Amino acid sequence: MQRMGMVIGIKPEKIAEYKELHANCWPEILKGIEESNIRNYSIWLHEGEQRLFGYWEYHGDDFAADMQKMADDPITKKWWAVCKPCQAPLETRKEGEHWSMMEEVFYHDPS
Image 1 (tube, rainbow, N blue to C red):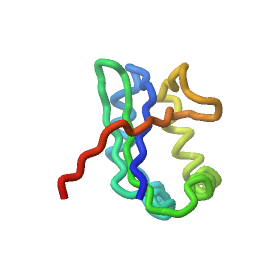
Image 2 (image 1 turned 90 degrees about the vertical axis):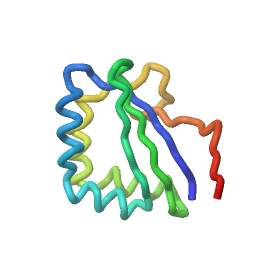
Image 3 (image 1 turned 45 degrees about the horizontal axis):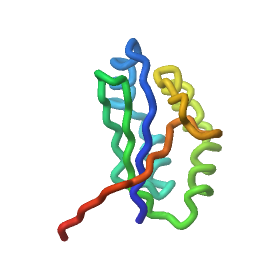
């Protein structure tokens, strides 16, 4: 299992819309996330800084292939077309990134 985090900006005038979209996430999107070997996926909002933070745990063997499968899905493409206008990618993101991937610098599991 691999823990992964990502960050992106959000347009202030789109915050309510983005919250509503995710409060009513399409079932096909949830199924696609699960089929891509992603578990414990959550998105957090820091409204003051206009930032979204996403976290998930990847349980597959080929992250690139699973993400490509998700990206090729027609329903996912429609979902992203609805969500992307709400988002403001960071200027410092790497080439090819929409959300900026983050480096894990600390983890504690007392179990």
